[in-house]
Image 1 (cartoon, rainbow over the protein chains, first blue to last red):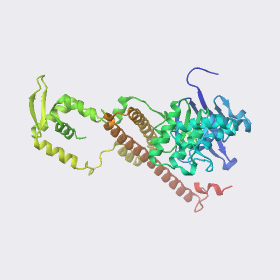
Image 2: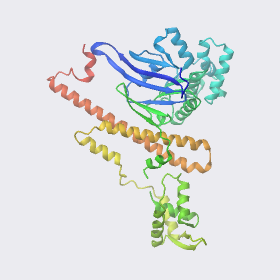
Image 3: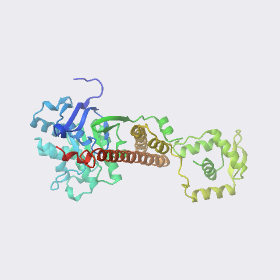
Image 4: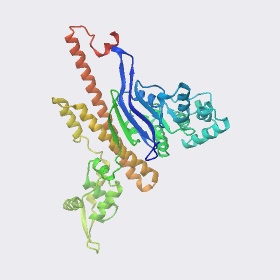
Length: 245
Length: 201
């Protein structure tokens, strides 16, 4: 394994995904090459039907490609059986969904601890790590509160805590700000940014330019292909020129 | 941007000389709109001609100090009181470019939109990063700069949303045109229309 440069956490190599067969086959993704390194925050944009969510599902092992290969922390997902794949998803990959997908009858800490407990971690250890994750997303005081007693923004923070709990290094977020007002949405971006700055690889699917702008790199999808990428320049002189004056 | 009114407003604070005005203006607007010192002096000349400022003399180090007159103060008051004029839409090169592109044959409008989108998102990334860095300093002196950055972020976001809309319109039009063409060629039957693709087997 290479130790030079930033470590690749996610690699999609010539990935294609076709639904259906023959005359009715629809290619959702074609020949997609995409790599995300540790500490990198990548946003994926594109019109609806361009393949954004399919890409995220393949990256997290929720779906398998029809061609090409997906690697998470250098492990080829194609070589894993169902149980191994489920274990990798619990240990290495965190998901944040638009509608949170929290368990309403559990507290914030219990929700955040869930992936660890499913993976066989002792309850005590799992809850300690869940408390740590809740602290990282800025709501340590809500640990014992039930999910339905929380605001949408707080629930989304719990969902992010569940996605980052333990030692997960790949965070996949599918329109995580969809149900939130703009201030709360920005709070979610702050948490994702902080996770990337702390060394996680983050992939965000969004249609909001102002959220994509938090990423180091923005990937544009159309008709299942990557057609463009934009990386921030971080050049103050350009900032002034772009202001138009 | 009204340099004239900006300089007057700064002189209402206290008498200043040209270079001080330039530095003060840039400090208060986060250096987003750099002022040319030549612009400052020609503007001061015109303000003096219009009796809105007066030369106070030398500060002892060879700088000519200007102060605001009562007429100048009245001018500043009415500037702040009046909303910024929107009667004539400001000339927007992007809107003009796209308006021409959609009406000229052989121009790839989608490519123009995408190239602009990449550039706009890149600018938005830079503004967002600058805002994040500035906000994390938590300095009161940065308030004006943060407001300017917010304004740039909103403007750029609006531009990207408008580009998305332009593109969606183009796609709709292309689909409508294709549907119409399919109807014509198949003599009334619509089996080639895209939305009927699922019913074929």
